[in-house]
Structures are given as C-alpha cells and as structure tokens.
View 1 (cartoon, rainbow, N blue to C red):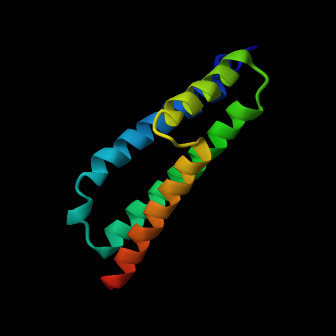
View 2: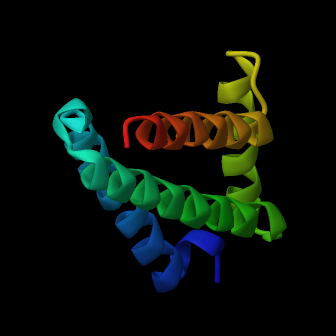
Length: 107
C-alpha cells in the first residue's frame, strides 16, 4: 500500500489542512483578541506546528516514492525562497516566540 493510500495519512492531512485554514481565518482577528485569547491562539499554532512537523517526518521516513517526491517538491518550493524545511520550522517557532513575548509585555 502506498503512503497516500493510508486512511490514517489521508485523515491527518485533511485534519491538518482544515485546522490550519481555521487558525488562519481566526488569526486575521488576532489584533482584536484579549491577552488570554492571544495566548490560546499561540498555543494552538504551536500544537499545529508540532503536528505538521510529525506529519512531514513521516513523509521523510517513508520509502514510498510519492512520499519522497512530496518531500522533494517541498524542498524545491521552499528553496525558491532560499529556505529549507528546517529553516521554515525555525522561523515559525521564532515568530511564535516573539508573539508570546509581546503578549507577556502587555500583561
């Protein structure tokens, strides 16, 4: 069975995409959130990033050709912006850390 044939993989991909879209829609109002709302949003984004990191690691560890092609496509796409997948995760982490620091300053 191929990597993408797995119902677990399909369901997690669907859940990740839907949760990400929901967080992005919600994030458009981030400036209107109170302190606790901002902290909760940041927490949810961190959870999302952890889930995405695990999902991507599954791709990397898979021997399935399509999974490997997906990893290479991601690397190529990010490479066009001069970024590696690890740098992307690091940048997202730094952004969330800055957001946390800003929330703490406003307490």
